[in-house]
Amino acid sequence: MSCVKKTVLIKQPWSTMQCLLGYFIFFLITLFTFKIYTGMKADILFYFLAFLYLIISFLIYYPFRRIYISNILPKKLHKQKLSYLQAEGFNESYSATGVVIDTVQRKIAFTTQTLADIIIFDLSDIRSWNIETQKNTIRRSDGSEISRDHYSIVVNTNNADQPMFKFFASNSHDAQAWISRFSAIING
Image (cartoon, rainbow, N blue to C red; front, top):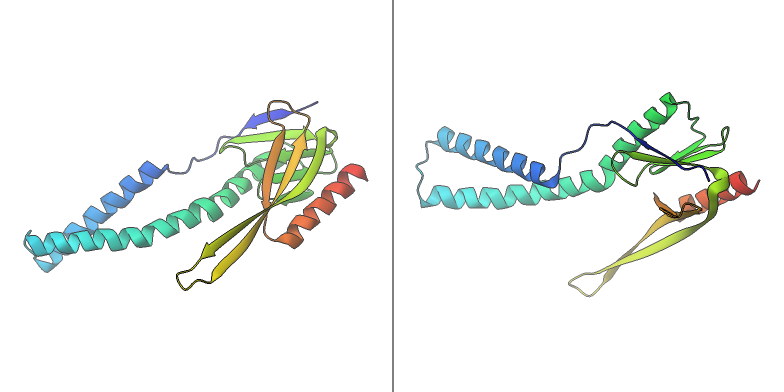
């Protein structure tokens, strides 16, 4: 078993509290700029408008933050880790957000476990791999349902400390392609 854990020095994203503090500072600056611009007195109307502005701006800010955390940030961190691996001599044969395979050196690197860690295995350390499907169903107010399947690839290794790794696939075709790719690379 040859598991190597590397820590990459990357720019850490803001925490939730830092983002909320930044949002609140932005809110106060724009609010008082509006107050100065309109010459509004600090009366009940001003505080009511400030409350409305706080609610509306947060309802705009929060979905963008969720999109950033779930979609943009993992890809950005993966690219930074991939460039680190390439600088260390890792040859990228196949890559997806969360995993990089080097068929020349017969190694696989998992990049999504923590913000700064990369865990590298020999391909001979991989024991099994399979598709995991999660179905999310949302019931709308009119009674109809909206369903979406989320696909991930689960890779089991012979490392007792961390025996399972998971990375996400965009759709069922992509997930099937990764399963076939693992079969061809490891068994072939």
